[in-house]
Length: 288
Image (cartoon, rainbow, N blue to C red):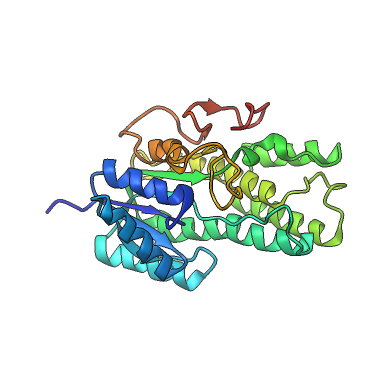
């Protein structure tokens, strides 16, 4: 019996996530799961796509809730036995006008965007089948150069984050160090920038590199992971200031999700919205 191919998109009920689901429904040969924290919003999004003649499936998934993650992973394992595409798109961002203390913003943003994404990976990576594709939706904010607090501390942080020997545990320690520095007000002196979203996305980009190295030694054939800046898109997250449509924002994530078998590149890379590979450790292109 042919195994059903499965694709999963987190945070798929609106914005770029919704457009990624739409693109995968049109191009992926298999079942596409739109996941969302809120069941009602997720179901509404599925109905919108069905009106377009597409056939997404829905499952509740809150990346900030370990029980929700465990239930989803068990569902995929018990129903399909494995997974072929994972797009980690779900994330939060505080607005510039947010009044919550910076330390509180840091704790919540890092917990959801970094540790929530990591928890999804821990639950779903064991289910990846040979030739599986993983895409983390990062940001232009996720470029290493955005770690731009006081020097020389910032340079030391950049060196740690980009080290080829960086481990998952060491990266988690760095993320937690930022949260503590945000709470006690020493983040700039310690090299960190004044944006919790930036640090969370730099963390996701650094995690991609670690996971890529792990995939290279994985017994499963041809596991590929990349991360990308989808562009400055007109979404709730950008307060609808971005010039790009959600469909344009979905182009690079969908491209990475649908990479053909046994490609030599991109692997473990950081891509721009135009699908070009960008050097994560040096000067980044102008953000769009």
